[in-house]
Image (cartoon, rainbow, N blue to C red):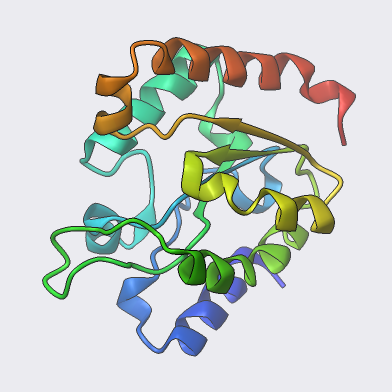
Amino acid sequence: MNLSAVVDKIRQEHGCSEDVPGFDPRNGNENATFLFLFEAPGAKALKTGYISFDNSDPTARNFKQQLEQAGIDRKEIAVWNTVPWYIGNQSKSSIRAAKGKDIQSGISYLQPIIEAMPALKCIVLVGSAARRAHIFVSQITDARILSCHHTSAKVMNTNPNALAENIRVLRFMKQTSAKYG
């Protein structure tokens, strides 16, 4: 099953296709070496229909800058969410934090995502909500699993070390990726 088919399945089972944005077609996706797992899609992803660092929000902008500083090309990546559907308010103007039941529901779709990526060498769990999927992910793949800080403005602005630590993790991942996979 390819990534588009997995997204279609999630949309069908979730019953609300506009709440489940797809993979950015400009990224590597099925051919990607690195999978970045964030928490859940925000309002901008719903508007564009894609989980993309080109979306006009601070999280996407920070993520794009960090990838560029680490020397990672968009063809090397796929970007997804631990909870693949929107978990915010009715007006879709404010996302809430993922709860345990959201993460449990969302991780059930990670295996077909990972299986659709034969070149995958590393999964990066972006932020604390994504890290809650670590045990599950480590049971379904032999890809390397790393983590970094969430790229939201809240995290980047309140933790003076977050930016530098993220870039170090991403550079390390890129430099050592030949050893894995």
